[in-house]
Amino acid sequence: MSRRGRLAGSVAGALGVAAGTAAVGILRQQRAISRRAGEDIPFGSLRSTPATVVAEDGLPLHVEVDEVEPVAPSGGAVERLLRRTKGDTPPVTVVFVHGFCLNLDCWHFQRAAYRGLVRTVYYDQRSHGRSGNSDRAHSNIDQLGRDLHRVLEEVVPDGPVVLVGHSMGGMSIVAFAEQYPELIGTRVVGVGLISTTAGGLDPSRILLPMLPARLAGPMTSRAMRTLHLGHRAIDSLRRAGSAVAAVATDRFAFGSDVPRGYVEFVDEMLAATPFEVVADFFPHFASLDKFDYVEVLGQVPTSVICGTADRITSIGHSRKLQSRIPGSRLLECEGAGHMVTMERHELVNAELDQLITAASARAATR
Image 1 (tube, helix red, strand yellow):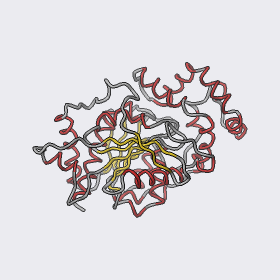
Image 2 (cartoon, one colour):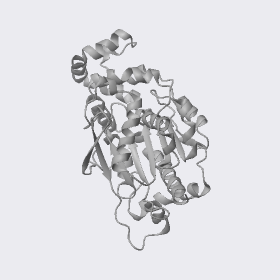
Image 3 (spheres, one colour):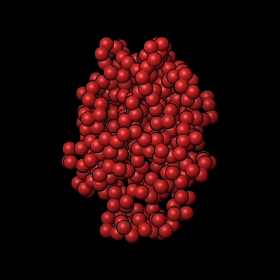
Image 4 (cartoon, one colour):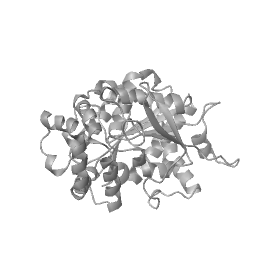
């Protein structure tokens, strides 16, 4: 057993597993893209032409789509598997859904790895990044599930889809599965759940890396009222104590030593999220209870990924998810923290390689 990871369970379909071992890896070799893709690319610099998707309440969502590069006539069978499926079905599109107080740039290493090889969609969740600021009434996990549905309607109107979510993004996918179970196995042919949960979360864990030091004590209702009423002052405190905030980010986002640039990049995303947004979403993490709705994901290849040193959504949450999703795989990244997508991006991408190819094989045989 590897010290850095442990796999449990299996993805449905032997063809998908076998192909997943090689398909995307072969493509990367053909395109001279290594497992360490993205290391030499500045964070936040990967971009494509932006689009706007309007949510059901009129809120604009910022979306970017990386299209697949043209296929050469001599392309091999593995490449054709990833780029098209049976009959006239479009190729698989992978939709990445980011976590709380982050933005679509957090998928840097995944975007660098799949750019041009697989059609991928990235979007900023409401009140995050370049998307519009939501009112409090619509700042909840169920609304995020409906937002994801709107993104699919607008930028992936047909063809098979793989959904990959990190942290709150995984919760968005679980909410989507609860609201639109008929799309699991029809439109949605694969799911990746990274550093996330479907319930039982201690929300104070989410706040610790984002609070200024003087407010990092036990979370009480009085503290939450402070977040609502004095969010601008709290934003100023955090900016003034940026060095302390960076230390907190390092401790809670990562489980092992990582390059300083990783910490600074994550801290910049956290600091860019107003505390008003933090306060609006906060109550919904404590009330989240959707483990009864994840079984439907067993209809498609599903990968659950988490670091064993995750201090926000601890490894127990991922183990419980995997136990509730029939046939799902579990990748435990030894010693990694909540931002496992960065800290162990080689392992995460290798698992996503298998997931995407298994989902592509499933779509091709429908």
